[in-house]
Amino acid sequence: MTAMKGIIFNLVEDVVRRDHGDDYWDDVVDDSGLTAAYTSLGTYPDHELETLARVVAAREQLPPTAVVRHVGHQGVAMLAARYPAFFDAHADVRSFLLSLNTEVHPEVRRLYPGAVIPEFEQRFPEPDVLELVYASERGRCDLAEGLVLGAADHYGQRVDVSQPECVHHGDPVCVIRVRTA
Image (cartoon, rainbow, N blue to C red; front, top):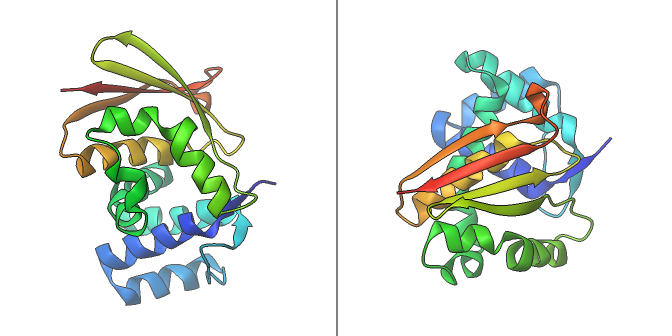
């Protein structure tokens, strides 16, 4: 069983509260059967994220992966407000994404000891395309895709994001393809 740092659970709560209100979040927690009292430094079982996503998904008639992607997408603004240094050093989404392995994730590991952080192999098949080969025991490529979309929003850029390969569809790896406009 893998575990996830509470900062991600805090994003789930913040996005759900912002989108639907406090009562909605309270109902989600009640329906989930979870305690759902997350601290950013705490570590919680991955299945709790899936449980919360399933409850919201059922209420919104969406797949759970769409809920997790939405949390990632909307959560970047919250992360940028909490950790501006991660974002301020970059002028665009590509520069930011290229810094994940070398700047952002090492600092996350320092701030949140024990955090299980994905690695991204970077490929450049075309001048305006960056492919991030997502590697994580967690299998949350939906969250990673949402975070890429949120980062593009943060930098005011239009991107086309697709996932031509995904382990959830039988592929050996997840590839998040980012085409900048």
